[in-house]
Image (cartoon, rainbow, N blue to C red; front, side, top):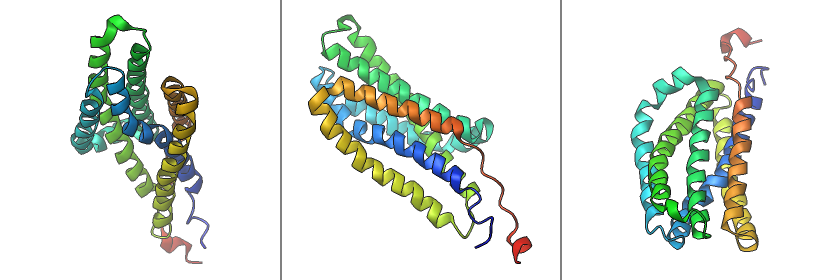
Length: 210
């Protein structure tokens, strides 16, 4: 094995760890939020907001590449996570409304959730286009399969741990505590992405034949 074949392995692990933390929070939230918001007397808000996220994500993906070149890898991912933090905080406001607080702010909470759902869709596009581009720059012909597998394992593993976390936390401590825990995971993700460094350039294979 040539010394440069896994030159960016540690960088890929940092990004994979960040995505693992992020997906632990957001995968389950995407599934349960429409039901929770309906129980909080916001009707179909959760379905409308989720549709807005994915609609915006699809169209924003077309313009994500030039934004990635402008912001760079680290700050593109940081911006993407910040949109998740804001959007999840808006959902948390709805839970506080359901608990008897913020009763006079129902219309504002509804509007905030829709508005920042669109923002989160843009952030999603940045995150996933950025992750794909990062792997392309970090990998070579010898390790691109492994690097993509690492990200896929992190994603699939987060479905296991995220659902188990929700299964134990929500019945024991309630939805509000669970949402705060998810916000905490997103803050941890933010820290991982602040540590992210640009991939090291791959040497020419022909120069390392010996």
